[in-house]
Length: 208
Image 1: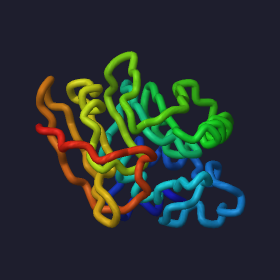
Image 2 (image 1 turned 30 degrees about the vertical axis):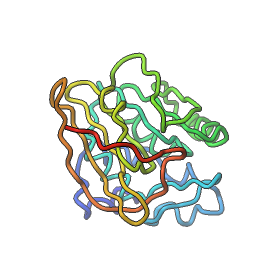
Image 3 (image 1 turned 180 degrees about the vertical axis):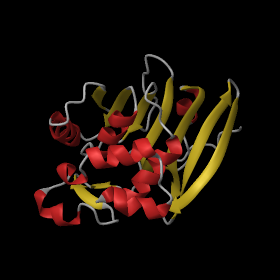
Image 4 (image 1 turned 90 degrees about the horizontal axis):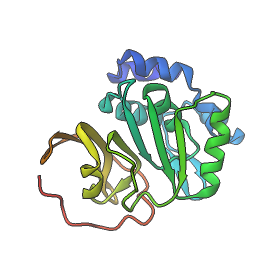
């Protein structure tokens, strides 16, 4: 159903469409919202958090263009739906969630899918995360006022970070690509409005 919804919105990547068929959004929301699982709207998942609208999620994933040999770090696990899509596309996924109860729900929701390439963390994604190594892609499912500089330095050369950036009713999806050791490129994908990252504070703009 969701695959048919996103096709008219220029989401055409075959691996992503396969992932949307495989991972059922309805498995990651409360039973009381099952009838809205495939509506193009943000859905409450408890603890003051929201699941992003499905078309926005699909466009974000297509922009990241994750390969099956890449590692991904996700900020904001939620109930695990976006995490499961990432796990279907990537070789390895690490995900951090500040709300312990949501992280536990996400792990439970994903058990039926048999993923073995996901590592869950409980912690604050607004601060620098202790990576073992650089990663190929970073994605945030909540908004930053500005993209944290430390995350850009934790990308591999050729890596990408996708985040929703801004405040209030002025937000945009930005894709930052690391072109070289000291060179980044930012592309604005689209405008949207979503909840902010918990504990995210305004930071000075990063100079490219």
